[in-house]
Image (cartoon, rainbow, N blue to C red; front, side):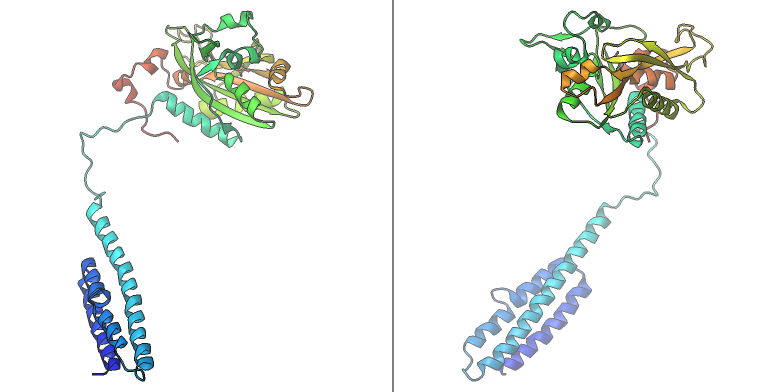
Length: 351
Ligand code: DAH
């Protein structure tokens, strides 16, 4: 048999074996096929060796056809390898498939989201839709960010409004009493325009029906040229309506916070009594939600912003209070007792 004939024969054998492997559908048959033809003792390898002993005259023609057979088999094996991978994948998918038509295990408990998480998710969605960026800041912070830079220098009487947990360190550190520290961190790191929303944990020495030592606030602020109180009111109104529904009443009252001027507080109608007056709203019909105002020039000065060019507004409020009102909870402490019975009433997912 000439080399040419031999090459032709091997090619035909391979074709038959290839078809058998494909029909068999077993990945290991493909590896075996590779070894049979291209392995160290394989048929193609032997053919290559024969080529070396071919006569000088025969070699060019024989070489050409041997090489053609080799590259044909090479390519075919590559194709088969890809096929084998597909088979393996299909086998895995088959093996690990979940039958979604099976009935649900009745004893199975699905967790629910904490009411504060539900409110936070909802608020983030509203503020994102208004173009705000979500930011974070440290819970343990220097006095400067929590107080001094917010226009509350040492001995400022407004520091008494917030009973602070101090940390015993050489430099004065504390558990932040509000999320307003994020204003300072952000403004020191970025230049206007800013449109920031920042939810987080805050801490105060306080514990009764409407106060817990740790609670959750949200800080929001905008700094740009030409920002007015009208922008502030529009923003607060929009988010209150998004959270409490378009019909719930809200109001603004003048108030004081050292880091804003003018300052205000905003309230919503009490969710428990619908404004008639009850224990929760201390018979006023209103629930205080948070504080707000136009950012004080002293704050801009502390972070090196030009207060003749930029103006801004800020607001801060408790998420727990919102959860209380939204879900008509009589006692704030319910939120932190980890009572499954109570927490299980809330939905398993937010928006
Ligand atoms: N930081 C204040 C507090 O915890 C809430 C607050 C009031 C935040 C007015 C603000 C603001 O940004 O403008 O009591």
